[in-house]
Amino acid sequence: MMPKKEDSINAVSDDTQSSPERFRKRRRLASSIQSICHHVYDKLKVIKKEDGTLLVDALRLPNKRTNPAYFESINLPMDPARIYGKIKSEEYQSIGEMADDIKLMVSNARSFFGVSSQEATDATEFEAAFDLESKQVLQSQSFTSAASTSSASSTVTDHSRRRNSHVKEKRDEEETDGDAASVGASEDSHQAPSEASTTATGASHRSANSEQVQEAFFAAIVNYKTDDGRQIAPTFATLPSKQVYPQYYEVITEPIDLRMIAQRVLSGTYQTLGEMEREFLQMARNARHFNEPKSRIYQDAQML
Image (cartoon, rainbow, N blue to C red):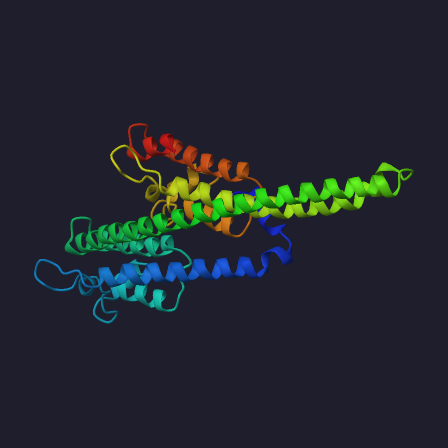
C-alpha cells in the first residue's frame, strides 16, 4: 500500500466518513460484492466433469483421518465447500478475495498431488471457470455503472451551471444594493458576507461535481475496449495473491488495483482528479515493471 495515501484516508474527518451518503455507498458496494460471489459460485457448482460427476465434489478436501499427511503438509487447506461457507457468512470484501482462495486451492493441489495430477487439473479447470464467470459479471456491471454514472455526471454538471449562474446574479444584485444603501461604507463591509456565502456554496457544488467526474472517469477506464473489442480492465481488477505470487510484492513497493481505486472513489479519498489519475498511472507502471515488454499485460498497461 502507499503510506501517503493511507495517511490521507485516516485524516478524513469522522463527519465525512459517517455521512449517510458514504454509508449508503458502502452498503451498495458490499451488497454488490456478495451478489457477484453468489452468482459466480452458483455457476461453478453445477459444472460437471467428463464422467458426469460434479467438479466441486472432486475438489473436496481429503478426510483428516484417512489422509492426515495432507493437513500436515498444507498449512491453509481450501476447497469449494469452504469458499461457499465464506460467501454465506459474507466474509469476502471483494471478488478478488474469493479469487485468492481459488488460487490457494490450485496451489495446494499442485503442491501436494503434483502439477500433472488429476486433482491439480480439476482445480485449474475450476479456476478457469471462475475467471470466465467473474469477468462476465464484472463487465456486465461495469456497463450498467458507466451508463448511470454518465447520466449522473451530466445532471450534476447542468445543475451546477444553473446554480453558479443564479449565485452570480444574486451576488451582483447584493453588491448593487449595498453600494446604493451605503456609499460611504468600506468595500469589505458590504462584500464580505456575500462572498463568504458564495464561496461556501461554490465549494459544496465543486465537491459534488468532482466526485461525479471521478466516477465517470473510472467508468470510462473500466469500459475501454481495444480495437478488437477486448476490455483491458479485468487484467487490473485485483492484485496477484500474496500467497501464490510473493515475488510480486518484493519487486512492487506500491501495489494498486482497480478495486482499491474504486473503493477510494466511493469513500471520497481523492480530493482532486489528479490524485486519482496518479494512481492509475502507478498501476500501469507496476504492470510494466513486473512483466515482460512482449506480454499482453505489459501492452495493456501501456495502452492504459
